[in-house]
Length: 394
Image (cartoon, rainbow, N blue to C red; front, top):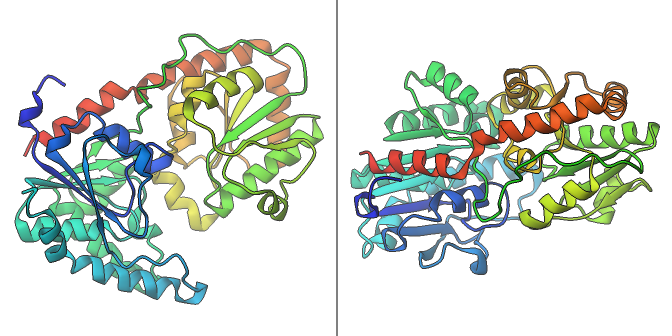
């Protein structure tokens, strides 16, 4: 970034998404802030969701904030619990002020996930500080509130979103939807790659022998994702293929989800550097599911799968199975040769697509090169500079 660090505000992060270099949103926040001046950054994180100490931002002050998190909420009480927690977070401005008084923040950063961001928004409002809001998930539709109170939750989000000094949306589809919904424009902040792991400079070489091997890397955090990965296992069984699962799934959990099979290998989560190497050496294609479940349609349309940052860096063909309205399918349709799209659910359509990919070397080569080109959109320096410029502009 051309602006010197001294121009960056004293930034206070408040929320219940930990900041460390592990996975998903935690790692993305770590990448956004890894070059922020440590003496101008403070992290107040939910005591119930602590970061991994060894993987924190070096030199940055981390302090715990009690946001009333409980990991053991009975199913029928989940909705009321999240509403009560939102109320508690919305009233936590004075606590945030006390914990950050010596730091003397000049701006607040929050991520709209769970309810912790409401504490940051409350403090920013009471202290009259700029609020920089990052939105990775469509919070009004994913906040676990009872359905009868969803409209109230949407109103809360609308007010805070409109009041924010910067509004950073994870996809252009989310930014466009929110502009229409809330009447204010935002910025698009795509996921960005880990700068400590060099990206491949050429497409992966095709494996010349062995069964067709497809890999999935990431969590199975929705029923729709789990169903599609199970369908992938079915499709590969039909064509004599193999599935590599890089996901935090235990053997009993895999069995419960129909994934404990001879041709399915559970590899667990591995570091990005190791993952890229293993995928290039052992996989023929990478699988990206987008749920077809009606209740997950809005989430699939607006969210953007962060795994594309690593998938495109591996430079193997990407197979996206999802509805036409989902963000990953729309991305693939508008990015030449970025991925092979399977717009129908079920193992039959997927098996047909995988057989076609396995039998067409030219298609394989084209998609591999296309994924590599598409990955330029997730360049670390580009994303970091865009973020820092938004934070510095108040």
